[in-house]
Length: 354
Ligand SMILES: [Zn+2]
Ligand SMILES: [Zn+2]
View (cartoon, helix red, strand yellow):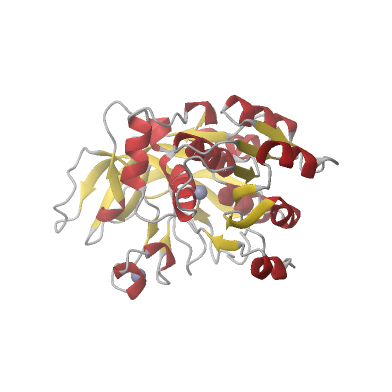
């Protein structure tokens, strides 16, 4: 007989309930985790709102969630690298480990990646809005005992930001603009600041997010629709920004980045720009030698991310806005849409049904 657990299962747009379902089976190479805390990501919100996320359309109801802190509850017989009882965070992107991307250390580009809590595979892969979840042993990263569960569940979005900043190269002393003050944009801001970027600006259309950016150490936070933006930018930077991190996914923000970047500067695309093509001033890439590069998920930055946070170099606590119990997963999802009031919403899972 299968053991049962509680999970928040998505059936379609805005159709998510906490239900009993089978505890996932432990297969070779895998560990079973008892989830303690899980964050609500922008992609979870897309699935919740529309029932799908861009090109990923689930073929059956499934469990969302991929930003987690959990305890290792059981390990498969062949797993020797991680002990039962360890408290871990998880790299939710399970790359194959064998292809040339994986072997070159670029597992985030692996075409066989299986993503936790995602419909990028058929059938979809169940995630961590649940009491238990299974992952491959090497997806786990042990958390230091003093790090709170909430921060452990921030390591995945922080890893996105850290990877993006590393893609840009050296940021110390560089003039940096972040477009988009959602959780990832704010994480990029915090990371760039910790690594020495100055001056540092952030743009967002939402006033609450601009205020948060200033509290988190931005020198300037502006509304991208401001008329004298080019002037403000020149006052702050002289000839323009060295690096723009585009974290909004809004085509006008990317277009504006080309006006605000200095010749020879780097634009890093982190935001998801949807499935439509976006026109760009491509000639500027040539005539001003602008580098336009992408940043996708994360490389092997999880242990570095954990060190930066546990050492106190990076403080992510102000980003955790509100925590709901699993029973209120629907309310948690709905709350995450209040963009000028909350940054990161998390779900606490305490195994009360056990
Ligand atoms: Zn995420
Ligand atoms: Zn691979």
